[in-house]
Image 1: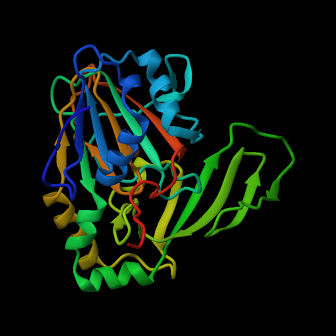
Image 2: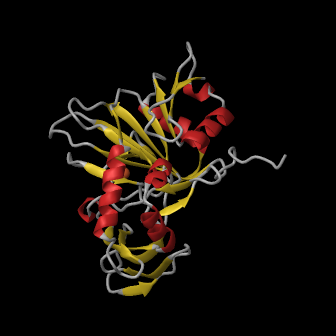
Image 3: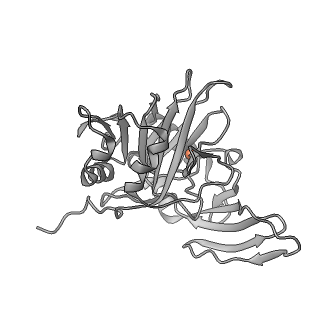
Length: 301
Ligand SMILES: [Fe+2]
């Protein structure tokens, strides 16, 4: 396995893995990829000649279950787990994919079918490094106070005159759930911390959905701290400034595949022009085929 680091903006550098002569991505050692991934949180597979219709052959190896992606995203290459990224050409600020939702994917994958011609870079920020540079006051605030997200999730089905029915979501932090069958929408409130443990013991990751505007995520109706108050302005601006300084721009080449620890890294994208051929697809692994921290823990002695 040929590897080098992506950027010193990340705590452990991230990793670019490239092909040895005539090797295929499927020939890479599973355990080597897993331990590199758990350590760095981000792998870019480059120059492997990956065909988009074969993507799931690669991602299946590292996946126990895929997340049920938002219904609005179109299926690609006739493979259910492969979806278009969200439409539009505007900038998307840093976030952890669906971190406000009960089905928060452990890993996400981005594959470049057609690179953008101008702009459209994917931005990445390591939540471990970001947490480490936050002030003691801000750390205290997020360690003690969970956030509150109000969600409206279309379930893809309506039943006339059935009205509203309570629906228990068996997920820590979830409550007040009900389905409105007339509109086909599941309403739920979720409490969740913006910071959480990483795959490496002692690491905390600041990876969440605080920065993007609510208009970029149709399922997210309201966002506040658990007590209903807004995040204080000075804290928000500290996060913005420090995250900006730690943001890396990935400029896509055809066939690039990014494997991202979605509980550690935040991602987003730079704007691009309407009509640009940019074609990036996403796969979301709800649960990986390897345990959280399965390769990073050591024994006493
Ligand atoms: Fe995203």
